[in-house]
Length: 134
Image (cartoon, rainbow, N blue to C red; front, top):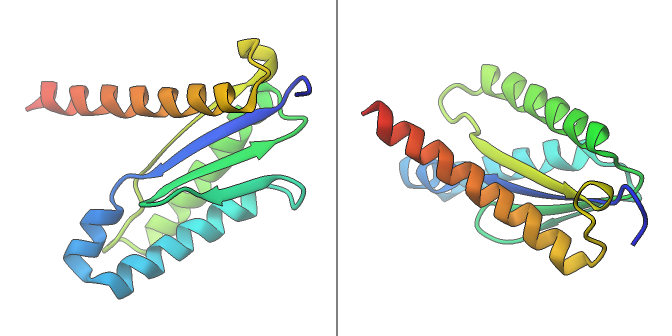
């Protein structure tokens, strides 16, 4: 794998909550909207795939750590803008990434595993913080 090859792991955190509250039609619509937002961030030559139940993976060449952080910032801004116009069913998501040059990992499975682990760890920390605030 080349230097600066990034793998992103995304999770639509409240998809089940939206679907349970508003039904499958709304849930599927919001999922499509999130998919469109994610797809618009990545160039045509990059890969974005739906990995089931609100989980996505994306791969990007020539994506340094700084560029990966910029991607996250742009997506966060786009989702915030979406949420301003859809306050009844806002999107809550987690995203994490791993970059070959930062991790020293040059096998696609290992890079994906690191990105997914980082996402899970980030989500776990978020839940712990929520529980601490109770």
